[in-house]
Image (cartoon, rainbow, N blue to C red):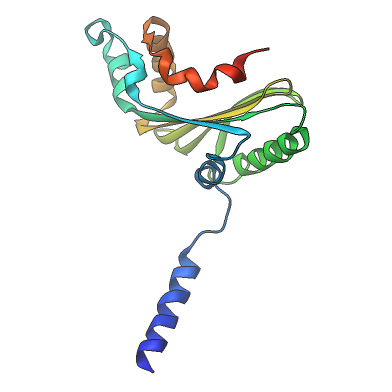
Length: 178
């Protein structure tokens, strides 16, 4: 009897501790293998750059970058309703209290936003959400340690001079056409 009571208490504690709120991480996991989606995990090795030529700020930005997760929805004639539904789900997730929006560009059919998780001096992840009605949408999560807005700007300057390993981006090729 005591064991049954203990198991019931343990199970109820586990259920109560689970967070049922939608999150971007849960959305990635749920959709990564579905037919309308393309998912990629990109390592820092995609950025081929001579570190000796980088400024101290650029080196710090590069070191703060851990990985990038990309989830893209490929739009076609058959899945337009699903596109609308999934786009609305993501918009709702990114309006949650964990996500702080930095910038929004455009609205409606073609739009993009940049958000982050964490506080301004210690950002855990940057999120880029972009949609284009002809192609679909993509959500890019840039994960790292102790990132800040300056790191992202410095990372962009590194990317301009980097030799990007395009092989890691091959799965996105069909999405970019049109």
